[in-house]
Length: 95
Image (cartoon, rainbow, N blue to C red; front, side, top):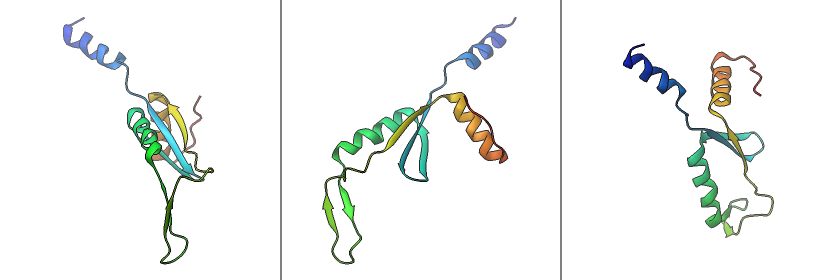
């Protein structure tokens, strides 16, 4: 076995970074690299809520109690399965 082939095999076996999904609201789930997802969740400690329901009477307050982003870790393999499923428009069972 050549050195180049061993290096290629080592690269294939190298641990790839994981992903995460963050769901903010029903039907709005975002997938991103795990470390960036952690940064988004950390930013929520300073977040405030902008209420724009009343025209010309916007308010800013603390986050409502019902705001609770759902964070899920996703392995590299599950991410690839989901991505392939979406690209091919087929259902893939992830375990």
